[in-house]
Every structure is written in structure tokens, then in C-alpha cells.
Image 1: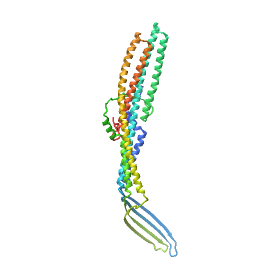
Image 2: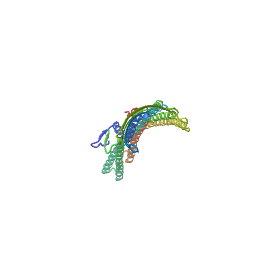
Image 3: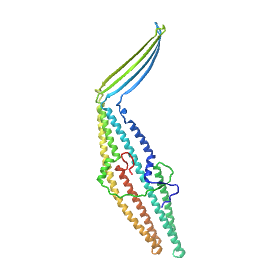
Image 4: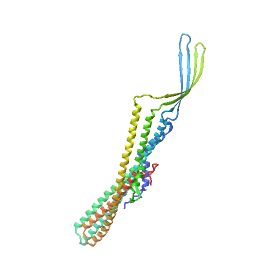
Length: 420
């Protein structure tokens, strides 16, 4: 059993995940990108609304001529409105494209969350794995120490020679050295978990145990779930939608553009003559104009733009087909590994039970003198290897289960939150 030093904080796996999601720098940066995409997603950015502007100017001059010099002061103020009433449905297409970009940003966030959750789960279980192995090595040290004390007692009674004591002592020292190395492995695994949580030099007591549910999966149902919920595939669907809108934007250039330009202006002018006959005037005007423009020929630029957009759209569909095939292959491989590792875990469990029973019987036989210390050492190492193999098999099963959950989109919900 791992000794928990005073001052350690208890840490369930869910809390470790929450800490990592809060502190992960990539997720924080992606959240900023998501905020930007959300701000951009509005009708103003798409160009639906008109633009208003105000202008004011002061024009002053001194005029020197043969008849009468004068100074002129002119103030001009005006407002103007510019509004594109129609430009080939580009406004609606652009707004829909902005919505897709926001959705794509959300999808990228979900992918980062999935990666983080999977990394934390496996790092958490890695610590538990190393702790379990440390328990095995610690138990083995105790068994070797008991054997050493037993051989010393036999030597004192004249039933053993120094060689047998030395062999027992070598085994004890080797096991103790291995246990010390395993403690370093536990610390390294804990340090990796703490790093993933975005913290430094904090000791934790992991409260959850290393365990896996040996469930039975329906391959076809799982495939359907993956095609509907896999985050990378969902992002590809959005990418296809964006490609389609790029094609529509290119086609929109074949439509005319209708614009409205309106406004008003006020001019206040004063002229001061040297002869004292000053003049002043105040004038205003308003205007409203509609304009229609249409490009008859531009060297085939529009045609080529549409052709390129269609090619890129077709490429997006090809990428979708390739991704679906690749993900399906990955899923079936994981399911094959899952079934194999379930069987391996069962065999490892049976092997450990046999090794434990053999160790108990051999301990009694050693004390009874019916087997020698060399045979007992072989049994002891067999138990140690069987115990480590069992925990490795358990960890490997958790690994493939976690990969299946991530691949099928069952790790993070539609809101980008971890599913407990």
C-alpha cells in the first residue's frame, strides 16, 4: 500500500479533469478564438445594414485682387447613407458562412476538450498503475525480508549455510532496489498528471481505483453513433458546408449590384470685404440615388472562381469519405483490441490467482523444508510478474475503452462538456 504523506489533497478523477479543463492553455486560446467567431457572427459583419457617415469641414481663404480684397469663411456639414440593397444574395450566404465558422470553432474546442479528458484519464490511471505495482514490489520486499530472516534463523540453528543466507540477502536487496525505482516511477506519473492539470508541486491522494467495465459492444450500433457524434467528422461536415457557401459566393458575382446612396449637406459661407460690404449665405441640399452595376466581362475571372470553388467542394466530400472510412477502420480495430484485452485481463486474473495460491503454498513448504530457497525465489518472482501483468492488462483495457469513447463522441456532449 502506498503511504500518503500528511498534507496531501484527495483527488477523484472527475476533479482532475475539471482542473485540467480550466487550466489548459490550448483550450483557453481556443476559447478566445470561439469568442471572436461569435462576435463576428452577426448581420452587420455580413453587410445587411447600411452605413451612415457624418462629415464637416472648414474652408477659409484670403483673396487679393484688383477690385476689392476679401476673406472667405465657409463651414460645410453633411450626412450620407450608403446601402447595398442587392448583391447576388451575398449577405445571406455570408451570414450563413459566419454561423458555420462559429460552429467550426466550437467543434475545435470540443476536440481539444476530448484530447485533454483522455490524457487526464490515462494519466490518472497511470499513477494508479504505478502505485499498484509499487504495492506488489513492497509486498515482495517484505517476503524477501521474511525469507532472509528465516535463513538467518536456520543458520543460527545449524540448518543453513552462509551461501543460502547470502542468496536470500541478494534477493532482498534486489527487491528493495526495484521498489525504490518504482517509487520514482510513481512520482513521475504523478508529476505528469499534475502537469496536465496545469499545477505545480502539489501532492494528491487519488481516491478512485483503477478499474474497467467489461461490457459488450454492438459493433453496428457503435458505428452509427460514431458517424453521428465523432467530433472530427462533425467538423468535416461543417467544412463541406463552408465549401458549398464558397461556391455560392462565387456564383453570386454573376448577379448585378443595386445600391442606394442618400444624404444631405449644409453650407454656411461668409465673405468679408475691405470696403465693408460683407456677404453671407446659407444653403442646404438633400439627395437620394439608386445605382445598378453589372460586370459584363472580366476576363473569365468569375467563371474560373466558380470552377475552383466547385473543385474544392468536391475535395471536401472526398475528404469526408476518406475520413469516414478511416474512422470506421479505427473503430473496428479498437473493438478487436477491446475483445482481445478483455480476454487477456481474464487470463491475467486467473494467472494471478494461481500465482498467489502457489506463493502461499510455497511459503509453507519453505518453512517445512520441503522446497529450497531457489525454488521459492522462482515462485516469488512468478507472483510478482503475474501481479504486474494483471495491472498492465487492466490499464490496457481502460486505454482502449477510453479510445472507443473518444472515437464515438461519447466523451464530450454537444455543449463541449465532459460526460461523467
